[in-house]
Length: 287
Image (cartoon, rainbow, N blue to C red; front, side, top):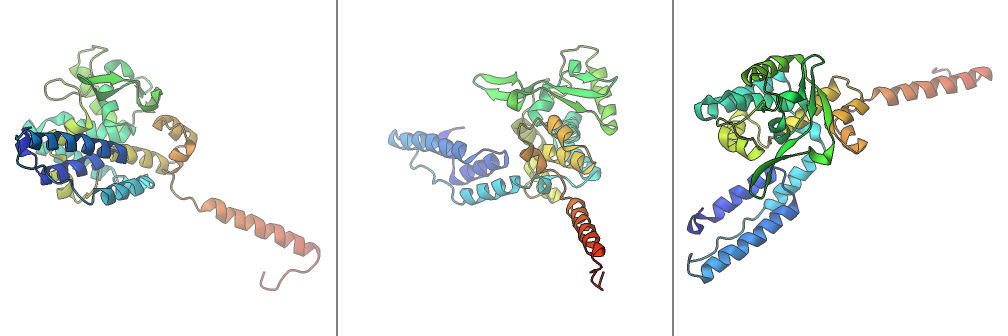
């Protein structure tokens, strides 16, 4: 982009997009430092009259985003209908109504995988006999372009493919004509997909505001899948393996607060005290 087209408003919009994409405080500060040097050098060289002011208030926005991450359940879509509505709306907003954008959305939520991991899925990773997806790689930006590397944390994961997702998987497998190395989901020209590519191609920010989701990010599709799995009663240790979490405390954040255990503990204590008092004939009248 030409330097004279960079405005304070544009920088602020970009900053909020970085926050929505999960960039941390250090990344944003480092980016500002580099941008500051470039723009002020451009002023010194007479390329632009003045450098745009840095945006304000982004630290507060970032803090809110970080606070929300402590409760990932609050970031999940409520149910299947909400997911289908989002998928359809993004396809409708995309150029030529490209169907695979919606497929990426549904795949990510149903498998609790990241957008880059959806992009990395190849035909060889799908076991239609057991209906298991083996998550081996993710698409990620790198110097010189996009590359595939091992998933975050370096752990290969095996994820169940639920029945509502299977027709979509079979459709993509049929489209690649049995090529085991073919990607299941690609861009309109066959390219790799990233969260930024998906955002731009589907006009994500406009769509989510129209649907009433103020801060929904692409990564929240993964939060959705893990929350649904937890609510379905998948054992925590299995959920941890599916998610690829190294620390159980991370997985535990997706579990619904269960009040049955403390309630049962209270009943157990009551029975214990009752038995003690009964042996000495000192049971209170209110019991």
